Image (cartoon, rainbow, N blue to C red; front, side):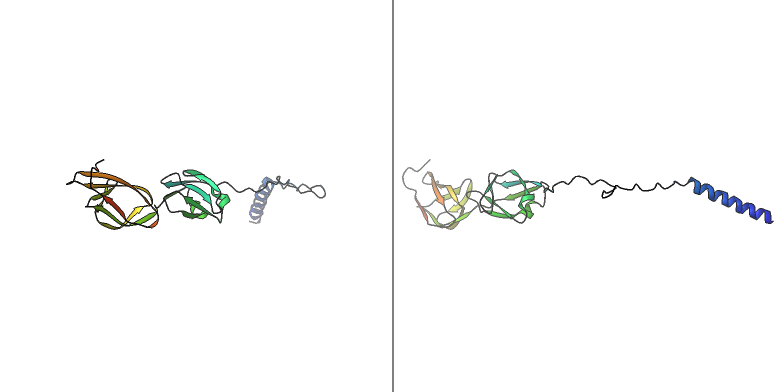
Amino acid sequence: MPGSASRRLDGFAAIRTRIVAAAPTAVPPAVPAEGKSPHPEPPAIAARPVARLVRVETDPPGASVLLESGASIGKTPLQVDVSSLEGRKVVLSKDGYERQSVPAEALAAAPEFRTELLPLIGTVEAIQAIPWAKVFLGNRLLGETPLTAVRLPAGEQRLRFVNEPLGIDQVKVIVVRPGDNPKVIVPMAGSGSR
């Protein structure tokens, strides 16, 4: 059946032709004017660092936030743009507490940076009450005199001396400096009740 084979062939050719005819025709590319690009360039925008704000908090609050140069950024809690601090350190400082130097990369690690400031510590050589007393710092019992090598936070401290048999309860304010401090001697005689 030579006739049927040619029909099949003609049918295949007809299908092929239809497919080709249905395909989209290519549009010739636009020819740009001499010296010009066919695609307009977007206007140039100056690259600016993207602000990266981080909330800095300390416990206790109110610490000064400084650059290493000593320039003040503010007091905690505050928002700091860490994008401009890359490769630098920030210093957290508060009277009575150790200074902390923090790399900007540590600040930038999260949206919030929190740290506890460590109190400066002084060591009082000895605390003695004559004849004797229980010694309190706030509500905390430090012990019964004589006390030696007593570690206390630096700064002004209110020590309370209590001798119940004598009926004496008195307060002595001392200033503790970081490092070593001389002994404190408190006479408990007389009317020392508060």
